[in-house]
Image 1 (cartoon, helix red, strand yellow):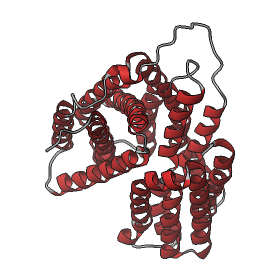
Image 2 (image 1 turned 60 degrees about the vertical axis):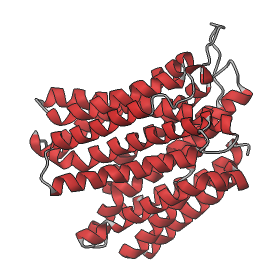
Image 3 (image 1 turned 90 degrees about the vertical axis):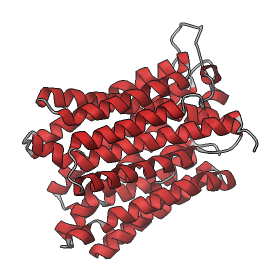
Image 4 (image 1 turned 45 degrees about the horizontal axis):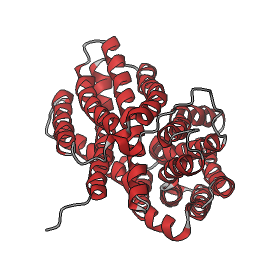
Length: 387
């Protein structure tokens, strides 16, 4: 049996890192009701606490990009993997509200550190292999998140505490981190030290890419945040039926991401995002117009196809653009951090903005906004991405 090549080993390491990041996300979401109950938090208090996850994410993005450029993404990915494994283990301890928000901040911080560094390493692996892989990596994140949610449901059914659930995830994470330690490309593979100390204005194109990712993030978040609520409150779905929009959306997100690399290679990122945006925007708008549980389920099914490839292809395009057209001006890791920072801000501000608009109008009317943003992606990608 032939030994795996350097790129094949690194691909395994990056895939495992994406799976672990998704596993933590799915684990955390599945246990939020239990965490809320333990500290007897109100909905508003829980919302404030969850803001510290976002604060941790946003505060880590810039430093993570710069450190990955200076020292290489390999050591930072390993630090992120280990830090995230330990962070998820302390969240359920909940000694008091102050410890809880600190643990949430650390969770967000290490999640973002790992996210930036593993995306940067994934871009380097792509370039070494000479073919697209980012969409597949993000598909593995989605599978990890689904696995985390399923593990959460299982541990709840078995009556295991949040602490024991978190301990299981931590052991899985640490074992995986140890197993993939020697599989990454060397740290020198993507170091980008800058010897010129003068400040260089970073190209505006990366802000534009981030804004397109921002639109994709709000559209993506709409399914998990509002799909079930719309089904139950507006169309009076039974609890089981109300999960259909999110299930349909998640299914097409996973399928779309697994196919994304192949389709982007054949048709190009620009055309793929443009057509996907049209499918997602028009599909969700049609589903909302038809109405009913099955109408909106089909709408979010098509939206999933529309936004599945947006974030991975934007990250890949940003890293590729930085390496080929702006060497010495901005490193791929810093470019990914910039684009991801703007993108992930959409996940932070999307829920409160859409919620406020839903109170002013109706939730059904407000959900046309994600549809419009998907259509904006179709237009914006034609102007931003070169191929």
